[in-house]
Image (tube, rainbow, N blue to C red; front, side):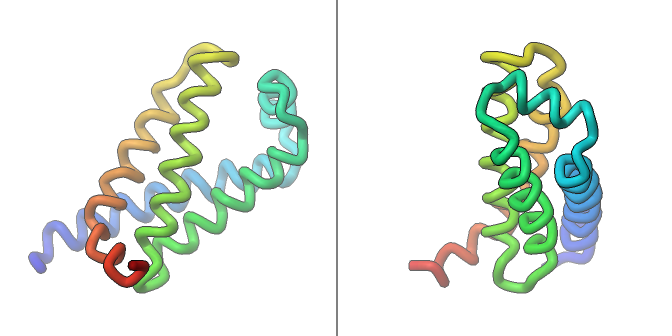
Length: 119
């Protein structure tokens, strides 16, 4: 494996981890914007906690050998849900969720060989 893609992927994983840990902690600590967002979506505050745990857990899994695909997959699914929530209920801006989703998809693709171990 070439050094450039490996180090480039490390940069992507670090950026994703920082973004998702920050977002997850904001949800867990009850930052007003997060509470309001989940209130507007209408799924209940319990889902804010579930989402936070998925975000923090997914970010951690990005650095666990053999589990990066699972972590990135969880983050990708979370961002797909966030994009749909923005399009259906919240409105703009959808761009941040879309960019994080694309970055998570890149990590999923990079670690696609790990899927063999789950079959």
